[in-house]
Structures are given as C-alpha cells and as structure tokens.
Image 1 (cartoon, helix red, strand yellow):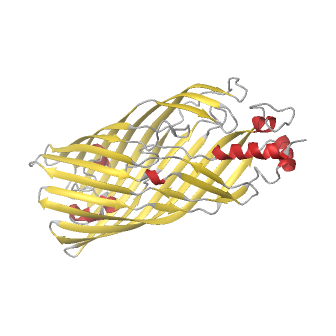
Image 2 (cartoon, one colour):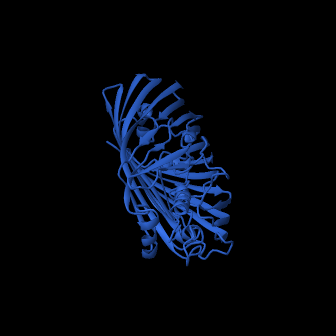
Image 3 (cartoon, one colour):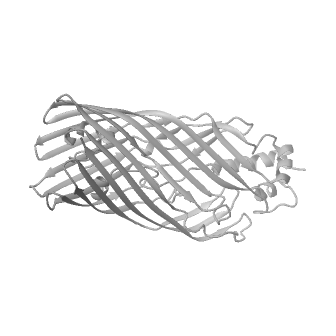
Amino acid sequence: MTNPTRLTQAILFTLASLFAVGHAHAAAFQLKEKSAKGQGRAFAGSISTPGDASVVADNPAAMRLLGGRVLQADLTAVNYSVEFSGTGQDAFGRPLSGGDGGDAGATSPLPALYFQTPIGERMHLGFSVTAPFGFKTDYGRSWLGRYHGTKTEIRTVDVGASFSYDVNPYVSFGGSVFIEHAQAKLNTAIDFGTLLAASGVPGYAPTSADGYSRIDASNNEWGFTIGGLFSPSEHTNIGIAYRSQVNHEPNDVDAHFDVPSAVQSILAVGRPGWFTDTRASTSLKLPATLTASFSHRLNDQWSIMADVSRTAWGKFQEVELDFRSPQANQVLNFGYRDTTFASIGTEYKANEKLTLRAGVAYDQSPVTNKVRDVRVPDTDRTWLSLGATWQVSESAEYSVGYTHLFVNDSKTDLVSATGSTLQGAFDVGGDILAFEGAWRF
C-alpha cells in the first residue's frame, strides 16, 4: 500500500511544473503582424506613416493621415519552425525513449480588418479586428521532452472602436477601447511511473505509466489604447501610443487528466480527488506596450521611418492556478523581463503606381537562458523585410510584405518535476508573408 505523505509530496512536486506556459514568437507570444505595409518596412514608422489603416488599432490619433473613408483587410501567414536535437534521461539516469518531436512549429494565418471614416473636419471614427497575441507548437505525445510539454496553443482576438480629434493640422489625439477574447490550450505528459516509484509503490519505474494533462482556458476582457500624432512639418510625423495591460481572469478553466486505470486506483487511496477532471481559476496579465514612431518624407520619392517600442513583460512573473478539486493551488513562476523592439525602414515611390519598401529590426525576447523551456524556445531575433504596394486605381491598392527572421539557436537544460532531464538545442526559424487590400470610397 502507498505512503500517503510521500505520495502527496511527489504529487506537489509534479504539479509545480505541470502547467507551465511556454514562450512564443515575436517577444514571447506577442504578435506585431497586423499590416502588409508595416511588414514590408519591419514596422518602422508603424504609427506615424501615412496610408496604413492599421493605426486605427495601434494609434488612433494617426487616423488623420488616412484621408477619407477607407477599408483595409490584411492576411498574414506566419511560418515558424522549431526543431530539437539533444538527449534526455529519466529519474534513474537511463536514456529517455521518444523522438525529437519533428518540426513542432506551425504555419498560421493572422487576419486583420480596419475601417476609418472622417466625422466632420476634425474627428475620425474607426473599427478594427486584430490578433495581438498567439502561438502554437506541437511535438506529439511521445517525444523526448514530453514531461516538459507536448502541445501549446495561445490565441487572442481584439475587436475595437477608435476615435480621434485633430486639434489642428499638426496635433491630433485619439483613443480606442477593445474587447479581447483569449484562449490557451496546454498539453503535458505526466510520469506517474516515477511518481509512484518515489512513493514506494512496487512494480513501477520511471516512464512505465505515462498520463497526460490538458488545460483549456478562455476569457473575455477589455483594454484601451491612447495616442498622439505630432507633425512639426508637412513632411514629418511623430507618433506615440500606449496599449494597456489586459488582465484576464478565467474562472472556468477546464483541467482534464488522462490517468492509467491502475494508477487511478492507487491515487484514490493515497490522495483522493487528485489528478481528476476539474475546473480551475487563474489570472493572466497580457503586457502593456509603449511605442514611439517617426516618419519623414525626404523628397517626392524617398521616405525614412523608425520605431521603438517597449513591452512590460517584467510584470508577467507568475500565474496561480486555483483548482476546485482537492489539489493544492499552484504558483507558476516565469521570470520574464521587459523587452525592446527597434526598427528602421524606408519607402521608395518608383512611380505613381508602385511603392517599394525595406526595413530591418531587432526584436528582444523576454525569455532568458535561465527560464527558457520547450513549449516555445524563444530567443532574440533580427528581422529583414521587403514589401511593395501597387496602386490599381484612385480607390484601390494592394500590398505585399515579407520578413525573414534570423534567429540564433537556443539551448536548454531542464529537469522535470519527476526528475527526468532534457539537454539540447532548438533550431528556430521563421518567415512571414503578408497580403493587403485597401479601398477608399
């Protein structure tokens, strides 16, 4: 028969890392991919450059740069690859079974939609649909690092309404309010073999009785964006915008456990009610961002632009899960740091129909070597971007933007809650292709 005290200690140790969220693309799981025009210049001048309706969401004050009524639709394909190479050992030091997980990344579509219309001579009204956070990786259930995570999927969708007022031709202020739907799905393998062996249950050894957990959380919350646009001259624009932190507090998180039947009977004696399907509540703070943007038209053909943004990931330190079952609450530590994104870009108007773009950017990750795990092995990256716009008519134009991400290999050296280890490196890469249509009427 099991020793309930030893079993409880082992279970608590397991739960401490069972639901750890990974770190994802574009500074953790933050996404900047909302505009093909912006993509083509690495988002330099993202909230100060004329002609891009994505400012409806990112800096409503810049809606005066859009002229008349405009509808803009964007579709971005993000191809993010994650391939692991390395080794792992179980709690007894024996090599872990399982493959390398293949390419755990994914190609994901990111749609965005914007509408802006003037109201009188000084006011502007806009609406937007965007996806500011998201990521997905899937290694499969039987890969080498399954006890650290098998599948991670994070999605958000924002629906916003924006308003701005032009104080004069040189100064504008604006703001928006948005409703954000957030969803997170996290799957992890559980090494019940080690858990029970450590509790003195005969017949069990590391990796001999795998189970799995599935966490599914969703929530709706609201946030806001405020900004200003300042134009020292008709050729120069300076934008600044603040996007608020969004505090999601889902209280109906679905926690599902696949437990071998023999293990279930042992748990029912040693710790009844643990590792059973239940609900939980938690709090997830998606970070605030402050962006400063500069655009300047040199002449009739050339323009230059730059962007600097700071994201307050440093407040994303821990998440607590409060289970409705007898399982103890768990505090998950992340240790993120604040990050900086900086870019420079240029536009060249080849003729009345064709505009070309290019840009480079440095994108800092909130994830350091100390806190990196397998769910999304995030690291700093450099962007190289190209793009173009074809003006079909006075009322219609189409744009394309492409970015290649240069990412250094990211190393990991992990110990799971049940004592298995994982050492190796991730070969991470990414390509982004965006398409856009804009219509004025």
